[in-house]
Image (cartoon, rainbow, N blue to C red):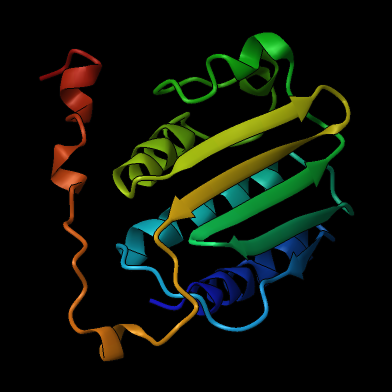
Length: 180
């Protein structure tokens, strides 16, 4: 799949949500196409979750930056929001299933605490990494790195994708929380 097209599609899909909050999404994208054998739907899920969180946890009227570069065979994507940020003690639990920061729990900000947990699992199943850097009251940067990116050719020219869907390897949520 062409990563640039995927990122642009997700950005366009968020225009109404961002407009309602008077927010903008500034894009700084790698020039030209970059191809990756991956589960397109799951990467849309990851990127959508990250952009949604940036919007939800930033003040109305703020700018959110999405930067994407290709460095060798790696795609490095970062989403930066401003103002709220997270406390250091919350960062260590951020990718825990159902975790929401205590002050967010008390706010009217909707969420379940599942998005970043699932995003990490999906990124790791693609052989990549996801990290968060945040300063309370300043803002947050969520970074994703995926390996095996090529800027030459496209999926049709290279034949069928070799990606193996490993989503069935995810732990069953009911079992994780002791319901099953």
